[in-house]
Image (cartoon, rainbow, N blue to C red; front, side, top):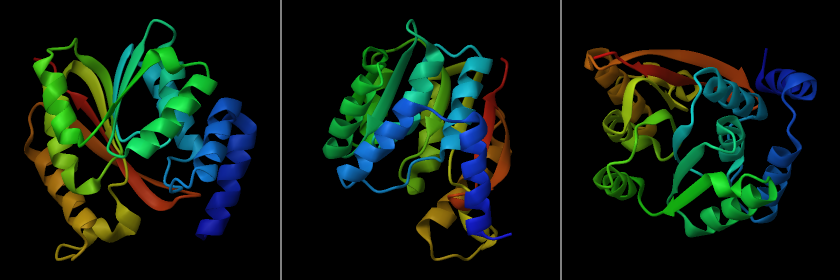
Length: 222
């Protein structure tokens, strides 16, 4: 099968079990604002939503907001008593995301912080917040390992950490790749293979976004 075939299957899946009018409206707003179309797919957004609900997540950290598409799915999952903290580098993206979140009726559950994520994470850690139940990482790929290190500081035993886009159309196999994102994926997997505080795997995905995959990691019990 090819990417167009996968996209057709994705469309069928979305029409069957993964439609969300507010999330779809956010995608249209993102396009109108000229944001890059690099959000997770709708099926993947629904997966994040169900994952958060399955673990009873009430505190979610998202690294990489873009226009808030995945944020809407996560905010709906935590419910009115839950909270999502999402970090975004581009102020324009954050402005669009704020509008989308408010339009979706979940704006009060979400705090957006604008700036370089590593700096924002340092500031968050200094605030000594309650541990996050779920961390979703979908930002600049070269810093993924550092983002996971920060996630470990900000979570608790049993928390889940998801890192998107680590298979890179299979290029993760290329040991001597000159692609910084591919090298970052390999660095992350090497880190996970030795980090005793995490139990992790990688799931490959195909769909409208092509061939990729994500890390699924659970913080180990003490």
